[in-house]
Image (cartoon, rainbow, N blue to C red):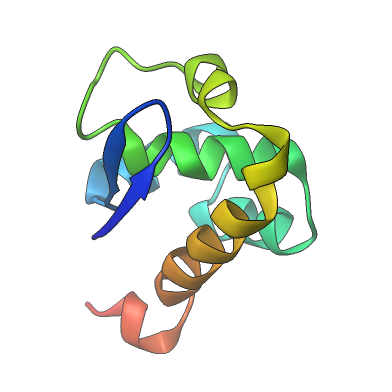
Length: 95
């Protein structure tokens, strides 16, 4: 979990539900992470949304998009890539 300042202080947290949300959108959660690593802005927003929805299940990806200011994208992207990268590593694939 990582605290981040958006519209207010929020906590990024990837849960099983986060991965399922990404799987439903991309066919596979690792596909979403790959798109994120390629710099896809929709994937950026979707991964951020999936990491925030645990706090507020009514959040939509578009709501999350409104929380991110252009000047903050690079900083937030680095945080998300670090967190999301752990999902796509062998340690993150425990059975």
